[in-house]
Length: 469
Image 1 (cartoon, rainbow, N blue to C red):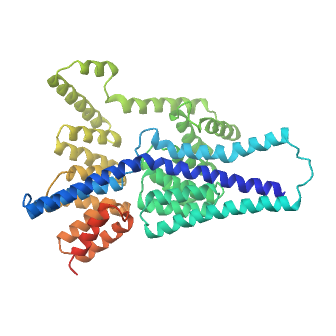
Image 2 (cartoon, rainbow, N blue to C red; image 1 turned 90 degrees about the horizontal axis):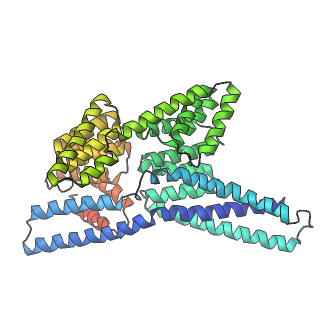
Image 3 (cartoon, rainbow, N blue to C red; image 1 turned 60 degrees about the vertical axis):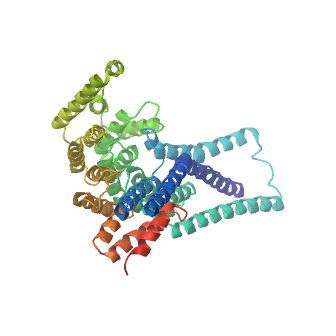
């Protein structure tokens, strides 16, 4: 029995040791890019001060230029690791990867031991066992020290999203699910993006030994409103339906997810096995459900690509003159706009149209397109930010922030109370209106989330010190 306890402890330590660098590596390359960008913006701020001192810039021009650099600093310091279609699925892949590390790897080790070792051999002497257990305890103590250090840093920087995510994932690897859920809750308070919310809901489910609580179901429903294809949300909402005694509704979630999943998706085999087991137990035929799901999945893929050029069109565009290529782009944008008249609930389509209009410098059309996206998905922070940036594009040097822009930022702050861009601009608006108390409240909260060595930290400190008492 003591041997198995030691194996369990060593396994938890090994999984945590592997999970930690997985989390750390996730943002390393992006961190390097952020550091470079922050240095560039720091130099730009210094150059603005030199130009102001030499009379090249007026006070108003310098103030506007500083605002623009600070805006870029906000975006750079809060920039998440670069995401692609594959990268967005990484949290799910890491979960399955950790399952393999935590389950299959130790199981394989035990099987190898049973095959080649001597499970019936006499016990080791007590002194040897005590030495081994002391080593295990020392490793556990070291890991707890690292966790305590991270907790202390988060106390000082409560707005550090990556820190809360790292803590949540480490505690989950150690099977401390309630503590993990609390860490993810703090992360979700900072960012309501689908990945963070899904991780929080998943931790709540783990804390309930696989039962999907009402809070997790509510969060996962919100995730699907933001990202209808998110696989974890669809899977766990299916489990919630099954646990509520509604196997057909559970199968609808799972069969749809199965149809959307690529053949090599790491969850595909497990999902298919669960579908077939549930269908067999409930006596529900699968052929019709799978045919309908496959047809719906094909239609979704067709909608995603309908507005894009074919390979032949791309090759033809490469041979066009500049004028012909511009006309070709305009026709593609027009085609997308026409499709959205028939499918007005396609939020991703509206976002693509808004970006296309921005590229074409059709600002009013971009604002209208992003407005449609916000109508369809009023609680998606990324959609609201796209709409806000169209209202007040980077590079807009103006003394007063546009009212529509501020209204959107207020909504962003309601959905994501610690969002840095919302805190910055709401503080800026309050300062401009003479409400120093409100400006100080917003900027103080933002300052707590900004690294002390960041030039943005110095700028915020300067702004706070300049506020009238």
